[in-house]
Amino acid sequence: MITLRHHLLTIVAVFLALAAGIVLGGGPLSDVGPTVATAGRSAEEAPAAADPAQAAYTEEFVSVVGPPIVAGRLEDRSVAVVTVPGADEQHVSALTALVEAAGGSVSARYDLGADLVDPSQKSLVDTLGSQLLTQQAEGVVAADAPTYDRMGQLLGLAVASKDEAGQDVTGRSRAVADAIAGAGLMALPSEVSQRSPLVLLVLGEDAHDEGADAVLAGLAGGLAAQSVGVVVAGVTADGEAGQLGRLRGDPASATVASVDGIDTEAGRVATVFALQRSLTTPGGSFGASGSDGAVPLG
Image (cartoon, rainbow, N blue to C red; front, top):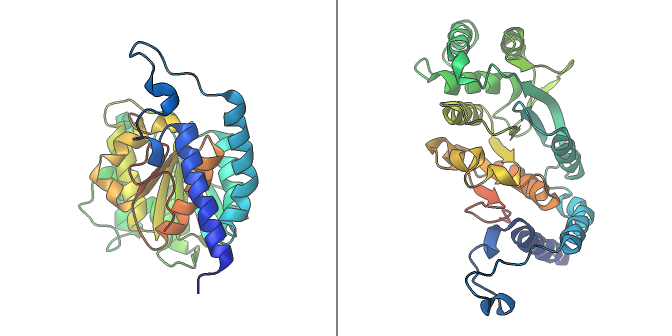
């Protein structure tokens, strides 16, 4: 039965979607034509800059209403946070806090090493992946999987689970994680007790090296194959022409959700909504320039 509380939460969530579109320049308002105030301007006249006070108010408003809106959306669900080199610590901490406000928990944080995402180190990644496939993942990871898809699946075996409730760490998952860390490709937390159904992959600095986009697509797609859901999240600049925007044009994006705008309160709220959605529905492009809207409300 739909309750009044459900209606209220839905209404406020719609407001967040609109707010994200206004502040970030994307979402459902991105295609709206000129307003009455701007329609009379000449073609040469530049649009007025955004009012800093209005933007600050919107951020403050969403920071206050965000936690109550996401409350319960990740109840009894855990999330493994995987960071790409250069991920902003403040954004990661804020996302972690909002996951907890949603009733979820962060099982562990895994920081990918620079060599893992460096296309020039493909030989190292390929050799280690082949060894781990033979020793730990034969029959679980396809033998003909490409280098970074295979490594993504191995990462998934180490940190994620296809069970919505999550699963305990096993001898195999720990061995895989230790081997990847031992090769300098990932930093491990001191203690991990659970593998999570959801993976939040937080982007770092935009990598323009040739092959870098294929690395990200392979790792994200591989993680998705070994988990219930994956959300790839980045800042506003990562959307459209940024690395997240380029990922959205890759076939691998069909299996992972994406959110740009985590440098804003609205974008972080949208990330939690995307994590919840990923429990039942893979994929989707959300955030400041997401083709599926600012925030998933389904």
